[in-house]
Image (cartoon, rainbow, N blue to C red):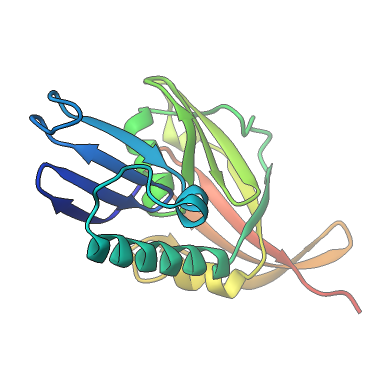
Length: 204
C-alpha cells in the first residue's frame, strides 16, 4: 500500500493510496470525537461518489481526477499473468525472514498489493498473479529458490524496474518445452529469491 496524496479540510481528510482511498477524521472531529477512518475502493468512489459528506467540492474534483488518472495508468501498465515455481518452492508459502520488510519490497518494487496479512503471513497479488509469504526467522537467503512471473509486456516490466539500483539482468531468449520465451531475471538479496519475468514469443 503506497501513499500517493493527502487532502485535508478542518479536522477531516482523505488519503489516496495506490489501491484504495481512506477517509478519516482527526481526534475532536464532529462525527467521532476520538477520530475514525474508513476505506473505499476506486470503483465504489467513481461509481457512487464519496462515502462521507461535507468534503469541499474543489477537493472532490481534485480527488476524482487523481483517481481517474491513477486507474488509467494502472490499467495501462504491463500485467502479471501467472506465477510458477522453477525450484519447487510452494508459492503460497514462501519463507521470508520477516513479513514487514518483505511485504514492503513486493509492494514498492514489484507492484503487488496486499490481499491479507498478519504478523507471520501475507497474501499478495498483482493482476492475475498471487503469492504467499510466511515468516521464518531462520530463513537462509542462500538457500532460496526461484520462480517465474509470466507478463504481458516484458519490455515494459523491465523499464518499470530499471534505474532502481536492482540486480536486474538484460532481456534474452531462452527455450524450454519446445517454445522460445523472452526472459529477464531479477535477484532480491534480503530473502534471496530470483524472479524470472517471462513472455512467450509469438509462434509462427
